[in-house]
Amino acid sequence: MKNERKVTIFLDDEAIPFGVFEPPARIVLDTTKIPDGKHELKIKAISSGGIEGVKIIPFEVRNGPSISVLGIKPNEIIESNTAITINAYGSETTERFIIQGSETPKAIPSWVWALLIIFVAFAIFYFITSWNMDGYKSFV
Image (cartoon, rainbow, N blue to C red; front, side):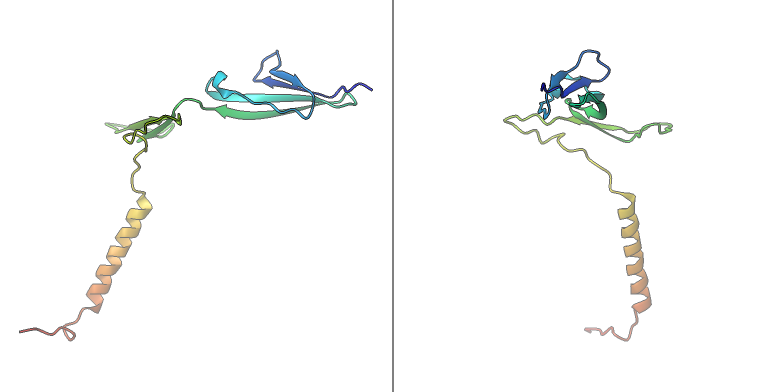
């Protein structure tokens, strides 16, 4: 009896398959040959009974540097002068490490500022309500 099971793999909407294999198939997807962006891996499998199944796996390729932008969000309405910080860094393995620009600076979150204000306000309130001259003794 001939083994008719096979797995056919397509990348995006290509008519020519990426590869045809007998299950279990093990492949290495070299993303350096795929442009950055959103893609789909379409897998068609045929069982020994001739029944076909299809599975589509969406994925995103990002071989280029990671880009971080602070100061503007997608679809945000802005006006006047807006300060924007842009940072791009990759994960290439090199002999030297560049410290400047390797991290994206981020602002202190507003909840931290609110917590600090509440703490300082409570400290002032406690100091005012607990202060009395009875416990104060002069050295003179």
